[in-house]
Length: 369
Image (tube, rainbow, N blue to C red; front, side, top):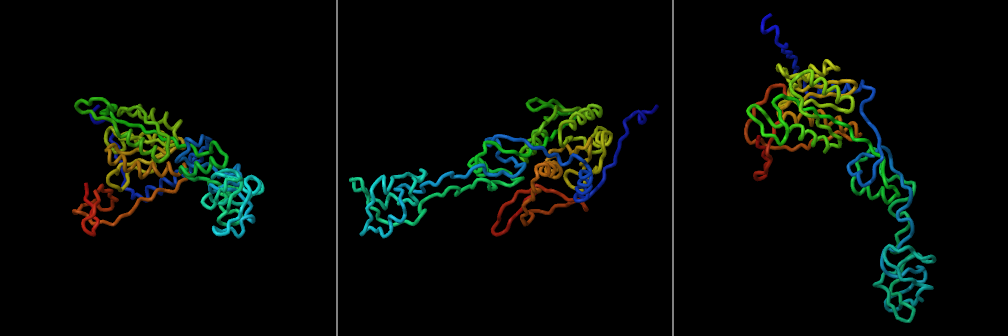
């Protein structure tokens, strides 16, 4: 038997699918999955709900404020008792029976419907006060339900909660809120040359930091992330890691091994365990992307080169996280700029070039890095 016959076959089937076509093919595949998008609900305390997405609408249990209260420091009165009051012709009211001292936020006493500001009150010191300015009914009074009325909608379904939303929900009588569970993303770093963070790599070894970067990105998008132990370039080990990941994760990402080299096993593993829909997208960097499905879960193989890994993770994994959370797709900001120098791109590819942007006079300049 020749040496060539004993070697593992070099399967080169990288395609050159346009980015939009790749997204469409993957989208059509995901639409056929009965359990996609992965959406679950959970109830959590408001203190942990910032940036989470509501699973349903939140309705007010009570009004806020739940009573009519003073909006100013002063005296609570019946408005009609102050008619005609001026600085030159003040109205005299008896304390307790006709006027009651009140502070901002205090409940309005029974039989009163307005507050005269303390600046417009002169205390005579004999149990009576002089009102120097008339007030209208409910002037300087916060009515019951001014902020929130019981039974009204506080926040809608599928809203990403901001700090002000949490305050409104709490004011409406809730201590917790039902939110969409964070989609579970598992990142599997592969490569026999990789060593853990904190190691001192010897010759031919590299510190595995892509997993940290990708996990942090997914967490910033709202996912719950597990970054597995480093898996060596062994097809059986990678197959085992992917099988274990799809049993608990909603999205699985294999980092490195997505190309067509002798030790690039991502496409083969996905094809053996499920189905590959795209292998190779016409983008630079990040061409050797693998888009597939295993056991009803999206499984994506991305390149190991750090810039390619981050870009393809953003292009193909972020939309999945946002879909599970019912969030609108993130749209990139567009800025017109003049390139600082010419760049040459491969015909037919979408090239993503990192640049440093600055202003020179009235022109915006983009300098490729």
